[in-house]
View 1 (cartoon, rainbow, N blue to C red):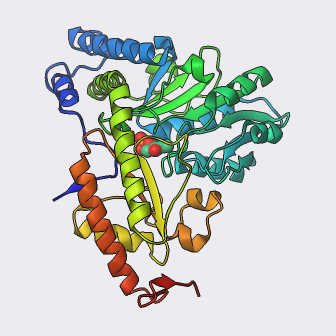
View 2 (cartoon, rainbow, N blue to C red):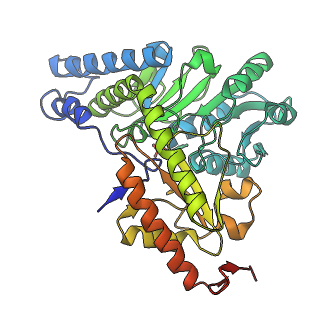
Length: 393
Ligand SMILES: *Cc1c(COP(=O)(O)O)cnc(C)c1O
């Protein structure tokens, strides 16, 4: 048995997407910037993909920029806004629970003298508009708040924050990488100026992303070189991946309602059974305003990494912290931001369900989880097996 419950880290490529892409690797491989039929065929496919993506986001095709990934889109939005700003001092407002693509970029900009305010979230992982308002200064160049969190799945009030930023004349960016499968990403409804997406989080190929940029927004280019993407993002146009991303987005959006219903039922089933059947288990993050596929749990007296390894030995693939920051043994910055104690944050494990996940797989994962938690507590010096309870030293 091999069960994949790590869809927030990446998703499997949809076979229909691969079918669409193949010809652009092999026969229609021309460089869309070339002035011959091979190039024109490539350009036609890219233009078509751009039109389809723009229509889904409620944007103009000229507002869609192709990048290499979500990380690049996030970097470009923040650095581009700072580099283009004529403010004497430059200030960014973001939150404490952003993806490292935002937080690490902010840290790098801070070393260059940019000021950053990290707005805290409540115990459900939600940011309040009031707190964003308080963080704004005369120097604020851009506000960046993620649509949905990758570790705990909390969904932020993007539309309200966006409305406020627009009234203040401050650019508003959202990292919507985790939100594509369940949320309506119409850029006008969200009131965003800039929005990042990544294809491999919605069953598209890895290595391709989008930065939506509203007309009139002036941010500096990030990649210099050729004149691709209207002179704003140099690098040979990646026709097959762009075509694949558009196809993956179309499929994902057309199945959204069905996906949300199916996956949220499985999520609630998993949460209910774990909290009822395993002692000293906690759900991290709130129950409402949560991605339908996200379950983040902590188990007292257990390290998330040990649990992850034991689940993996039994064929169940999950994540502790985020794939981007596990590698370090620090507790997750997101779980800590909820006000959870470090020792409990250490025990956090993320299950992220996918559109192919079945109830049978969830049942199997729960059985493996119960056995693993019992076994790890038996060998935990902090847990008194006889009494069935423990204490932290
Ligand atoms: C995965 C992820 C990213 C990074 O996207 P890549 O395409 O892998 O670089 C950024 N933000 C969030 C919220 C993510 O989940």
